[in-house]
Length: 291
Picture 1 (spheres, rainbow, N blue to C red):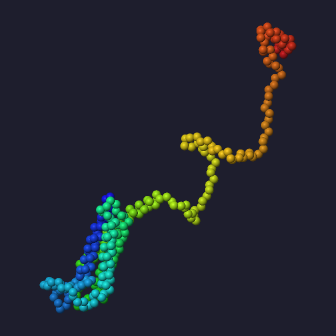
Picture 2: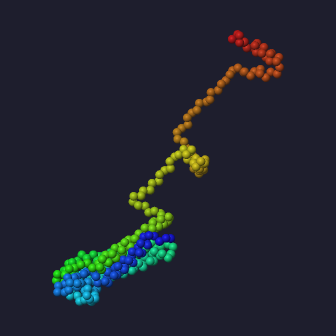
């Protein structure tokens, strides 16, 4: 699998932020003081978290200068020491987790571990941004950060700039790696959807179970579906229910009767017999003309 862009971006920005913060922590260049009275104009004093250096154009830089004003005892300096060291340690931990999570040498990265490393690096960026911003805010305040009473000028030095850049890179790199939580969360939700329920669902207060009766459907709908005819289910055990009401009387069917035997004489065997029978009929019964 190709390494995602967010992981690659985080792995590039985080080490750069670590190097910048390390330089800002060790270098004596948080504040520049110049314009000392009764001293050459080109004399400059660089103040850092651990050391102060004196620099002059005609001489080499001289470090380990004595603290005449109690600069190292100021609260912003002491807090900056602790937070910058903590930020460096947190950044190293975040990079270790990121290396194990991204795993460029293997096929599939570990998104959860990469996202966790992004959160750690983001916290490291905040830990370094807080002391840098506080020191910059109190830089010109002589009561918070002591300086010489002579008309000296106080300026921002290069270490503060490096601290700002390193903190921003850590924040961006941590945020980029933290985006790795998105594929991990998506995969976790997909697994939960596919996983069958372990037991019956616990009914809540708003859940009401209603057993609705089955509607009585016509046979054409009930027993004819999917293009196939299905006979009604046999239930021999069910007793036949008696019909309600009482039987109605039925009238006898009307019968037609004829008093005259219309078949008399039809079974004659010869024409004479039939003629004789006709004459006898005429002798015994009135003719149609008499009627």
